[in-house]
Length: 114
Picture: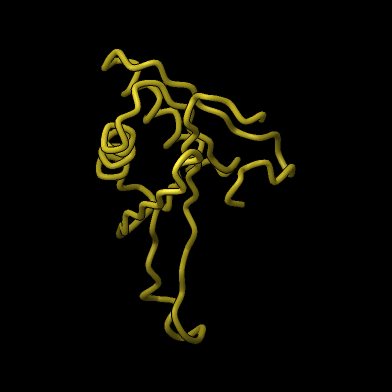
C-alpha cells in the first residue's frame, strides 16, 4: 500500500508471554495499534481476543484523539483480526466518518507490524 495523505492505523493482536511455558496459562493478550503519520502507539490489554466491545471502542476513539476524520485501518489476515477490522470500519461508517479497511493477501506479511 502506497503512502498517502490519509492516515493509516495498523493493528495487531499478539500474545505476549512472560517467562517459561509453565507461565503461559496466565499469558496476556493486547491489541497494539500504530498511527502511520505520527508514529503514535496505543495498546489495549484484554482478557481474550473476544472482547470486541472494548477493542472497537478504543480503536474508534484513537483517530479522534489524533484529530483525524478519514482513516484507513490495516490488520493481519488472522480471522480474529479480520473480524475486528470489520467491526471497527462498520462502526466508524455508521458514525459518518470516511473509513477503509485493508487486509493483505494470505501469507504475504503485508501488515506493517507483522
